[in-house]
Length: 296
Ligand SMILES: NC(=O)c1ccc[n+]([C@@H]2O[C@H](COP(=O)([O-])OP(=O)(O)OC[C@H]3O[C@@H](n4cnc5c(N)ncnc54)[C@H](O)[C@@H]3O)[C@@H](O)[C@H]2O)c1
Ligand SMILES: OCCc1c[nH]c2ccccc12
Image 1 (cartoon, rainbow, N blue to C red):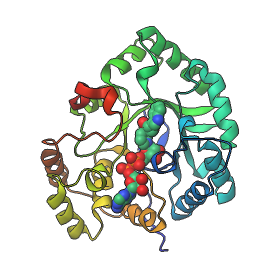
Image 2 (cartoon, rainbow, N blue to C red):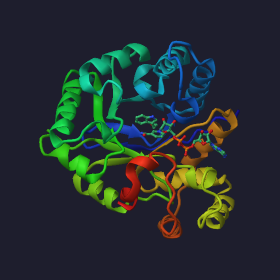
Image 3 (cartoon, helix red, strand yellow):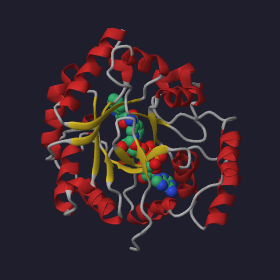
Image 4 (cartoon, helix red, strand yellow):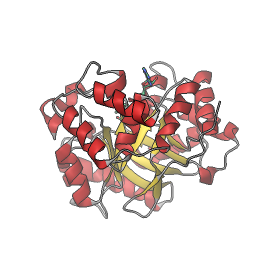
């Protein structure tokens, strides 16, 4: 399998740390619904393949029940800790975040994660509950157990609640993002407060939501750049300074998707996809939770 030599670009976060702009996820395809104690060897092998190919940013979560697999793969990869960028997220044990990170680190066989995220805002009903959780995230960071701290699936009202008492805005908000879910108001809020955006589900327009209004244009761009539509979808996020999280169990696809580092879309191409996509709405995750909020 050819190794793509073009380096993945990085983005500087508001805390001074840098994050690689393409990450390999251990949710979706790898999410365990049953018992966590048995090791999913296919997941371990795929993470090792991803690392071997050059995915040094790895995205996990306690709720995926794959932190152990991620830890084993990291250990067996032979790649030094400093070269890797490891994210995990808290939601199941949100009531005691300092303890939750210790449990996650043990499974990951790590001393620290590069990024620790609150997985979703739905555990809290009041500003005070949001603020208490965020204060515990700050405690985890101060203890050196997470280099950067952030959130996921937050809307402006959730971000505003924690920012009333936070020492600094979250470094990043990981959200579903693709041409059919563009969140213009949320992205504007992020920009105003120096919060980076990360995209999950970046391939949605080309994998889950066809047929759709971006299809022909994405196909033409894929032809122009000699890549697949998947790489165009990933590059479209990266070219908007969005940290992009994808995944696959197929080595060929993992390898192909790294080609998104080898070309750049023009500003006109980026805005054309925005324009074609904004007429359609498609949410792959969390339908029941966001409902009318989707266009924000
Ligand atoms: N924070 C959150 O709430 C949240 C939610 C969802 C995902 N995530 C993270 O983001 C990662 C990526 O999310 P995603 O899987 O939605 O991203 P994605 O849009 O990149 O889709 C990847 C999925 O599509 C499949 N796929 C890839 N190429 C394909 C092709 N050409 N044809 C058909 N199927 C193809 C893969 O097997 C994989 O299951 C997850 O693993 C997880 O780590 C986070
Ligand atoms: O990140 C994947 C989305 C997801 C699946 N199960 C969850 C439980 C809580 C928060 C997010 C998720």
